[in-house]
Image (cartoon, rainbow, N blue to C red; front, side):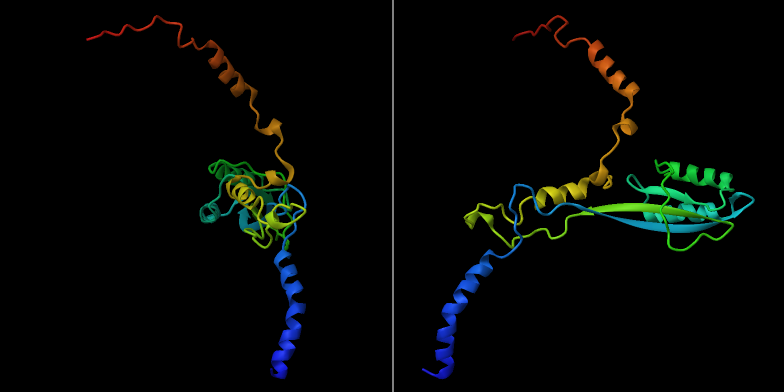
Length: 212
């Protein structure tokens, strides 16, 4: 046996425990809740529009409409106006009308942008949130072969990834939704009254069926 072979033969028993330990390494999950949870990120997009006499300058409304079409503006997006002068109310109304055509309302929360707004301009800020589950799928650890019966590292990945992909308003994952802003008692009452006043399906006479 050569010196190299003799050295490998001596190191092999020492490497075996390390290999066994390596098979148990990975993402630990000591409970029944998934360690991989949805993470919400926010991106802000800004467009500066020129104003003239308190209104949008010529061509600016069309430029704003084109920008919103390119952004594929839709439910879940927040649109705010950053106007340091607060003197362009007609321009605000123009922007609000255009935003309303997408089924949205202007947000009162104005995000802080990096560059200051120059006088005579309005800054339109679109805030868009996205939910994702980093680290999924994760098969680094299989809890079924452990003595403490931990769940696997991939536990909950499918459910949370689907939730992050399907939720229309990712901000709801952070602080939920105020039910007062989405509940309409008038609509609810109409549905309840329609249910109560509708005649039962078995109230009428049975239909006669002729035999051959």
